[in-house]
Image 1 (cartoon, rainbow, N blue to C red):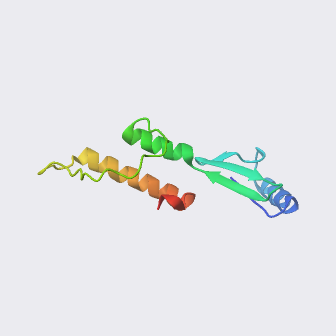
Image 2 (cartoon, rainbow, N blue to C red):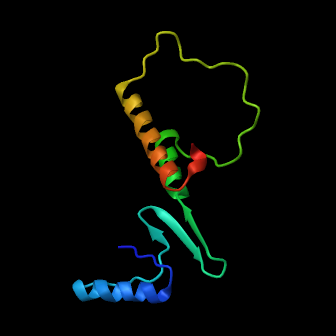
Image 3 (cartoon, one colour):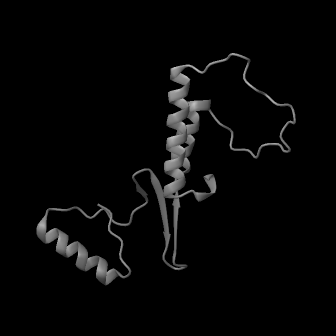
Length: 115
């Protein structure tokens, strides 16, 4: 269970209330949670959430080891359409659908720039 509060006092009261009901273990400040990397800078009042490892795992499953270098631009003007009469296999279609769904999840959780 992840607990967030606007003050340490409120956080401690919440933990005491929950521990009175159930046996709990306080693992301290969070750094990773459900595939999210979480960085909290209390001095600056900033919270950073990253899913880079999750996105790299998705792309590696589809395209192998992906280099995170900036692509050269502009893109080639030569169109690369599929061969005439080419039909994607069911396996390729499922892989594509899974990748798109996984990336949409990341987009909705922490990466609006993926849209």
